[in-house]
Amino acid sequence: MIDDNTVLISSRETSSILKISALNDKPKIEYAISDESVWDDVELGADVLTKDGDFTAQAGQHSITYVPTDEEGVYEVYMFNNNSGLMDSRSDFEFKNYDGIGGLSATSMDNSYYYRYRVDENKGTFTLIDQIAVPYSTFISSVQTIGEHVLIDSGQKSLFTEYDAAGKAIRTFTVKGKTKFIYRVYKYYFNDFYFVN
Image (cartoon, rainbow, N blue to C red; front, top):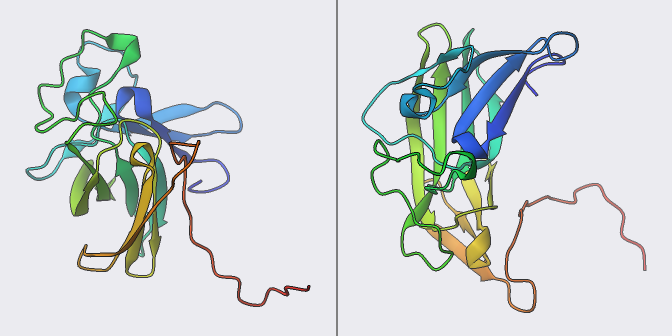
């Protein structure tokens, strides 16, 4: 939620993040954050923001989080960039603009990423300002920033890791047992909570 009437929606299927306004009366797509090739020859009814810099846009992302800034028309958004070359609704789509795109197998040796964008609505651009290469996960997964640390769940690898501000792994945990995949992982502190035996 950006405000009571505006949202950012993660469309994994189209490797896009959509800003939707007038949510409560006449919803309208304002723009998409995506590689422009995804929307070639497809009617979106809105602009695709311009990629500012030399980087590969997100593919099959999950767990987007909106972060406001003090600058009008500028915000940040971070996500788990699955880097997954899968689009069921358009099986003929070729991920030509996606260098290093991952395969469809959970055992792939490719990488997924923590991605953080700066979005400038005034200029109509998005810029990659931070990234961490993480174990590959075609689907699911999550990311959460905690101060300067980043908690990343590579769901299909059944592991999650907390990284420091430099992107160095502090500790990795692996889930074992019948449940093979981890949908989401979040870290919370229980300050001011009572625990009674």
